[in-house]
Length: 289
Image 1 (tube, rainbow, N blue to C red):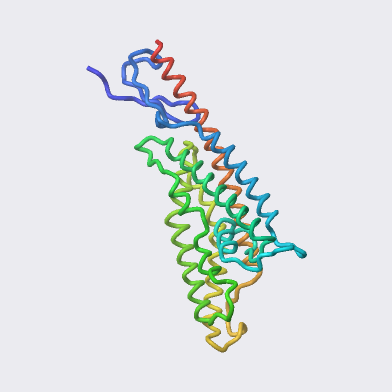
Image 2 (image 1 turned 120 degrees about the horizontal axis):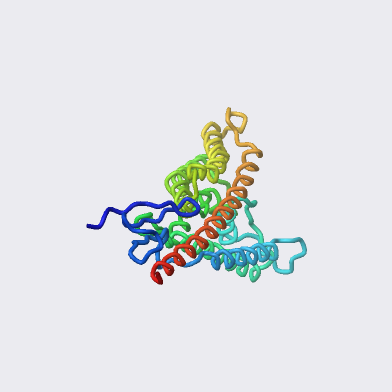
């Protein structure tokens, strides 16, 4: 009678399961891969993403407004909101060098974001069905800074916003920030971490919590200030006012979180590539035995 499967530790902390009573490497063993057999190496996706991000970074610098531009774009909702959502660590962009350069830069920026999401989706689809695989749609919802939109929509519109309107905008932004970070970003970062079979997956909290705190403080203090001001008050009426330091920390932690995410994705990609090769080589050896 065939015995129950028993786990034998694999290199790098993974596990391979064999039927009890058989010898690993023999033709009668039952091999279980650590990743889906339909998976593929994430390394080409890594390279494509880095190239796309480099091109987008160049295009954004090329399209930036400079004095003396022959045909500048004074303000554009597309330019402001797309760059704010995809680059929360950078100052909000209002003007561009020209309309042509602006659209080229936005196209390359959107392409780079899509390539990054496809890379993350490739990592997620390499997981076995029992390991909660994920695709490319979840990263789009999770890592783009959708929560900044309430503060940037109609930023360049004529007229003055009422204090109550500003307060509501920042409260909505905080609600979106809280939901996106706690319900989406934290779980997905944890799943990406575990997709490489890396230990100490709770350490993924460092990739979102330091970024969440200054943005939350900025949004809440701004909302409170405009609430305290009312329709005809002043900033002095607020006991908790937003400061330039809050915005600086929010932007710097956004950049640090982005770099941390790229490092995590690179490490997981290399680990998946190596372990998938090991698993397939071991299976070929088993079949040939």
